[in-house]
Length: 495
Image (cartoon, rainbow, N blue to C red; front, side, top):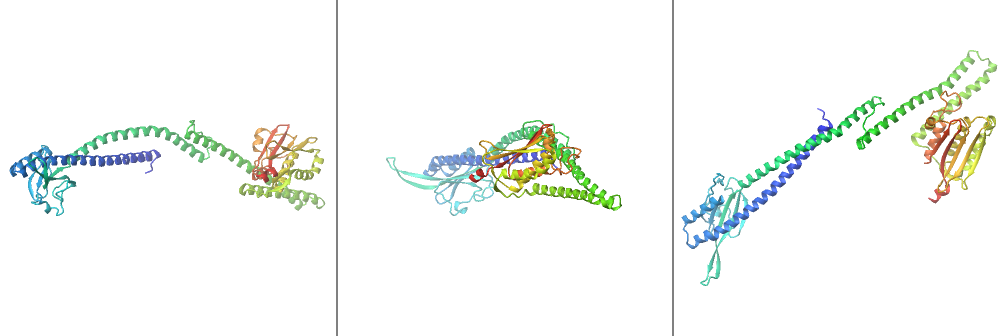
């Protein structure tokens, strides 16, 4: 049978309460019993000393005979509810009296009283005051408190001065601990009732608190189950400032991100299918046309060039996808060197000279930094600059400009490299997706036939590997600006 969280909480809470109260009762009982036994022992010792000084000494002095002594012992035994023994200095039992009680609780003997105390224990100490708790050498059935008080007889001079003290045996009292046990049982009953009341109150309080806590937890469980089935539109409807509310918000945020991820997955499959299908369709069509004679031999060279361009496009697409996958899985290997970023930008701009002339777009380099040396991977940063300029050139119309700007902000150990175009621009939604692999701004995917949709994704991974940042700002019909940072070589060397 499967138990719920509430059941386990109840069981654990009940176990803790029972153990706690059990330890408390045992400890209280032990301390109370020890205190009561000590108090009872002290009382018996005082009574025994009094009886010894008033009664036993009188017997020794000849004021009482043995029957008179036993009569007085019986009085004391009844009053104290204790057995009274008198033994002389040789251990002989001279007189005894059994306790009696109106409640009938008297010490129950299982053996006969010996004629000499040394029959019970050859090492019994008559001349010292001591006490013990037990069955007194097996003589009693139940535990007894037994006290031994020595009897002394003082030898007086005619002037009343004590000349000597003679040891004349001992007085022994045996009292049952039944009264203490009754008192402890009363204590148990007194303590048990409040404990039960506390347990009931605690469980009522626990039920209220558990319901308040577990109700939203159950709701979260239901929502999580819906999420596992793919239904990411379900909401927890929990709005509280505590940890449960924070968990609910986190789950809803996770669902939103998973929904975006699912959308991205669909777009990714659609995009990669399109980018692979288009060149493959062209290659297949041209080869079939050449094979069946639709394209005559004298024109095949032209169409073979088209097929070659399409295969190069597929190769570039595949290599870009592999590169990006390696970057995201393992992170790019960066070889940090000290170089001048202006030299890298100039060399990269030279590669776009013919394209700019053909398209009628001018590129300007603006340097506003005194120190342009950076610490980075030169090859990969050149790839970043190439990708950003190539992207800007694709979407910048004829007669417009592209600006590459290097700035050095105050109190900043970094250079800021900006690539800004005067192209078509992007809306906010497009800016959020621009770094996603295979994403292209034109939904028809017809304007840019040469791009793979991987350049900006690779660019972002390279910048991230340098522990730098890249941002994009854009306005529709006004242009787009990409800005990334690089650490100055002087700052890295100083640190």
